Image (tube, rainbow over the protein chains, first blue to last red):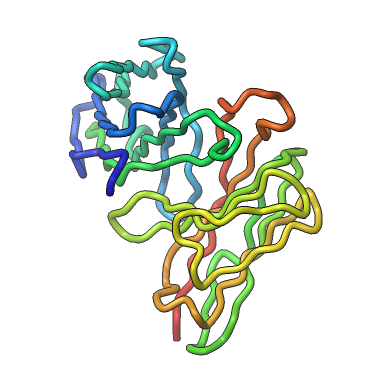
Length: 115
Length: 118
């Protein structure tokens, strides 16, 4: 049972345009969401997170939007740069001592930013 | 420089052998985690530890074992019971809920070990 889904395996955008990566989840108990970026043969790098008490969090070129009623989150990258080309994973977690720190990851979306 | 070190980067195992993957962190994090990544899939949790001398099974613990004798170290052993061990293994650490009372802490990852069966 895939609790976190990234339905688009790949996305290609032109440099300078907006990249929008999407993620859906099924477990309404999730209350903390993260985006990671991963280059080949490297570990994921934390990008940005959002708590369920918010619907938007911004950090430079990266903005994450959370729609709790739709159980959907998205990552916007504006403007996109060729160095942003990587695999992006969304992840979710729920608060509670028995589950603390356990992240559930989506399958990843490969972003290609063309010069 | 603070970070997470996984070694070796590439590892080969003969069938029937156990092999241990190393993970060391100097971030003073209490919590550590092991994930497995297969092609086209997300990361799946193998084991995690919130504090020294304590660890919990994740979603795919069968065929794996861990120990947490030191705060800085969380080695993972892939045993011969693991039927499909070829994968990319990632170790992570984070500030634990027990440290801050806040479970909303990002995990930070090492660069992984790629394990292949000969």
